[in-house]
Length: 297
Length: 301
Image (cartoon, rainbow over all chains, first blue to last red):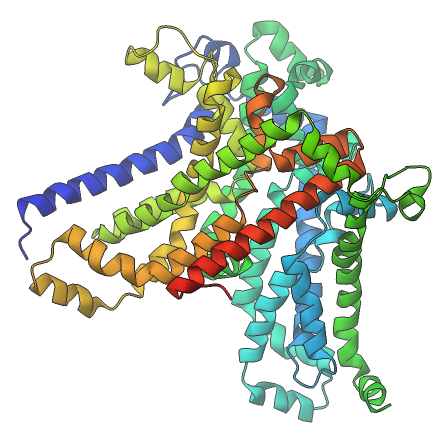
């Protein structure tokens, strides 16, 4: 079909606008990466945009040698792994029970679960609760409150309900109880749902900085996002550089090529990499996630 | 008791749900009860239950506080702008994407534009700071090259620009991901309709206006209702991360105020009252929006 002049014109405009969007979305990421590979002293002269002018790996060297940053990474990895694993297993068990029609009290349990989706106490009562539970300044404050996700339960439950009855019939005949059936038969064929929910839970865990800001003051327990936020907001990096290993100090003393800003950029990149790595998988399961998300709002 | 016997007989099934229900009770229902602190004068030494009741005093204190006007202006102003600009943007993006006939190009646009949604606000605020920095920020470099400014501007410290930066950042992070729902809705439109319209000689814009938009209207109105219910949530993480004392007057909103006075200054009762004030108005807004939508047949409930 031949397009009219007007149609071709508008096509051109549409492609241009979308290309512009791609550029605007991608550029900040690219530019920050470039700065992280550029010597700090050169960056502060200005003008570094698309390509490093004075390439260096020193920024990353310092970041990888910094004890506090390494510790924060470890905390982030630990909370993401334990938080995701525990939450998915516990929520799946809960959802499987809720998916059974013979569960006595199912209707009331469901209402009990729906109410908190509409009303919640808000920041202050939750804070007071965590405090009275003695979870302040504990690693587990980043894991425990998120163990049961009502939204994920609903998604799991919907999936379990759609499984053919015959599948579990045979397990029952073989003498499997609910627990055995769930772990031996149901979960192994729930791959896509588990993957979707696990990925979204993991991303949320990795990105969460506020929980630690609220409840944790012990510097050794801060996850990377929270530490990065502190670095960004108060530029504590400069004092930190004084405390880093002697290798880093000699770097500084020799050329003063590393600046607070170049280090912050390198830290930012390292904190983003796990997200970029799982992104292709996340994207695969997106649409399902969005459906969950739209349900959520 | 018949029920009790039934429950005992299926104890292994009940064991799957009861611990989780207790968990929900602790982490969701206790805070709901805890909101009563808004009607008390919390005293650290007396604890929650022994603290004296003060009725609506905390609410009155907020309504008469010096900051009240500023906070309400910021909250309503920022969230209104977010609604007016942020709500249609993903719809427009979905409509544009739908016109793209090159699969590769479409994929690239989608992959890149969805990505920021998955980055934490800390990283995003880091990008904002980098882009807007006075000594090496790309925005200043670009504007200087274009001769629009003669010396670098420290954008984040100028109150007049704060709202613009905030809203632009929100768009940058969210527009792509928010477009997915609309894109899904558009793909559900019956292709016969477009074909019939083509035969009738309808052009691209006519088709968007006469077919696509009416067909995805139910989805649009559901999201609009939800957005109106959220009108008092002007943002939290984004504002917290981008604000500084210099721009406090234009950046403090209800949620950040609750955090600042409640957690930082330990005024639990007062902050809880502010939070409850917000929650109540939000429910009212949601109900009004829903009843308006019901007249057009697209309500939530």
